[in-house]
Image (cartoon, rainbow, N blue to C red; front, side, top):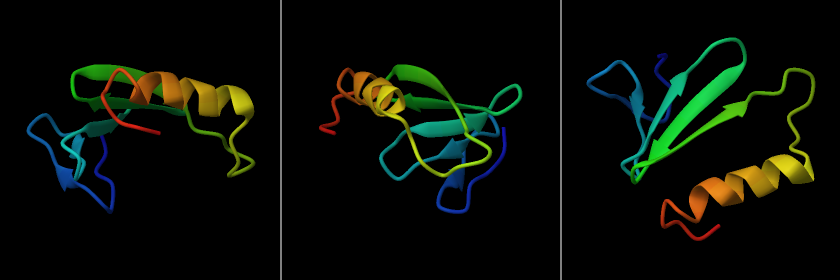
Length: 70
C-alpha cells in the first residue's frame, strides 16, 4: 500500500484517512477503501479525471453502509 499526501500511514502500510478510514493500492489501477468496517475496491481511471454515473452510484453504495451521508 502507498501513502497518500492527505493521510497518515497506517499500521499495515496503508493510509489512515482523517475520517478513520484507510486507503491502499491494489493490483493494477485499483484502489481499496475501508471505512467503518465497510470495504470497497474502485478502479482509478487513467485518461480522464471524471466519474461516470455508475461509478458515482458504486461510491454511494459504499458510503451508505459505512454510515456516511453522500
